Length: 408
Image (cartoon, rainbow, N blue to C red):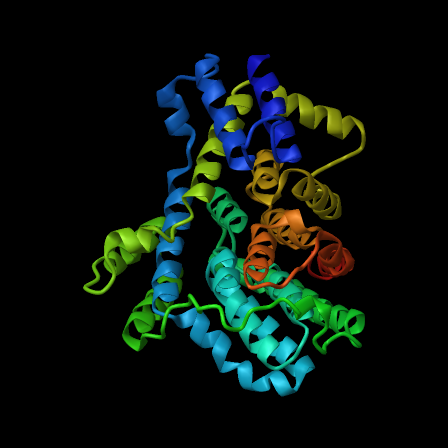
């Protein structure tokens, strides 16, 4: 009973995003829920620590270290600057920038890609007298969509891959086609919606080109270290070595640096997100220890809702991902999936990721782009994002439904 109440209050707080009168966000709310599970006697501190899925946390942490290496080496900023010469052809530039963001997000944390790309893109776009808004929206949409293609593309995919023991190659083969089609749909919708608004207007009037740039200078050696680590990690995914062991080993090698001290590298690790994961593991374990998940499943089946049906799962996943955010939604849903039915796990991964584009709050990557743009003097409003985010998400989920029908 206590576990059910604490779980419900925690997820209600996560859905609201804050607690009245307190300056606390979703991670803080999840952490409070985890603390309450221990203080309330639902589990001991030892059981709470044991509830944390260490392999998933290690994989997430390791990829953040590798991404930090590439960011400090200037790889992201260098990649963005390489496509700046295409600015005289806005539609081509939009296509290439979205492809680049999607490809990098499939291999690295999409949040880092957005953090590094946004100021560089704004600088080039404003200098070329183009409206930055459609290109920034393209960056956010593409980074979310592209991250759906691989197990390591985003945090919820890592959790899904680890929980079900999914094969990296099989996951990629199944998830890549809907991701590519959704990316194409997103591009076409952006071109349609902004066909008369690519030229700079009021959106970039306050952008500051004279603001001192903060992106790191490109360092060939340091970038090569990060890229070699990514290549080695993917190669090791095809061996019997556990993913988390491969990842943490490579992260450890990157920490052995003569140029960047440990504090600088670890300063780019998203401890906020890692804390959220740990807290949610504890909260979900607390409620799973009782019979509540079984009762919920029985109730849903009584209403004719079966998670074994891929389309039903995709719809529920998309809805919950926009209520709670995709990571908490995935943690909730994986309790009801059959580990032997891999296609259901693929559907959950793609649908929860696509759902992040629906509104501005659906993805951390969206918020990073908007906040970074604001710091550069470019305003991307909630309504502006929803105007393109909602149709792109609906188109993406429709594509996923078609792919389910074709691929099974």
